[in-house]
Image 1: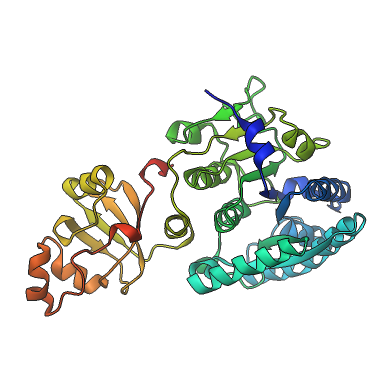
Image 2 (image 1 turned 60 degrees about the horizontal axis):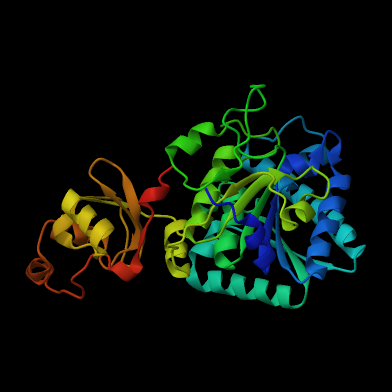
Length: 380
């Protein structure tokens, strides 16, 4: 198994650093020592010519401690209020920490809705490019104060993956409170062994991950592996390592083989297909037969109505929809040329029969290959 991480780190020009809540907080609130250490290390990377985007958890945890609560509240209004309190304190400490090294920071709060809309997605990307050109450090977090279930990223591991894909970065560094991915949960198994490199992410790898998140965070090791699956599909490597270790970023960029390194795929998804596959939230499901699945996976074909078995959900033209085999295996996501009602009318038909059934035929395909992103290998 070829571990060429030193070459990858040496060649990097732009990176995303994601820092988890358990690294940034301690019993009495923010871990100021950790914030200052990570900020100093990022400043050194910038001074060395790198562009760095920071995705930082910690707002909710900071708010919980600041208000004096025992745990994250369950009620959404309280959670949003806690996040509002915590976000102010978090960004203030980052601003002070980066100012020590004459660096400015910018706070960016996002929801998945911001990235689902193609225009807003491009606007957010352009804003980040401008900040990087000004040598201002973007500090990104989910906008918990306005989030509802429909517009949540889920956790900051997923958000970091989205930003990594959006900005065509060279590496995603995920800093957590353990040394990487183990073959067993190291919190409960003294014989757990660190997995230094992962070349293929499959169901066997997900079994190694602990499903128990930290008390102050939302993402466990499973969410980190899923984030790795997304970015490596785009040809971008990811490292999971311990953000509490001294000079951790310096060690990574000096070529030290620490943490767990996820090898990027050689045949990578293009930027727009990454947006379709990993950023858009599917509005429904199209189930297809084995013949259609084989044509899409093995021969690079578009999805024709003849291969469709059933349609689930209600959606309009252009909506992102998952396509699955009849055994429920998800193969990917695509943008549909017909609404759900019309697809139900034409499923099982040949393309030449569409006009007879609908009275019009703008397209031969339900999903064209150019608007279809295959993620079958990433169903973890």
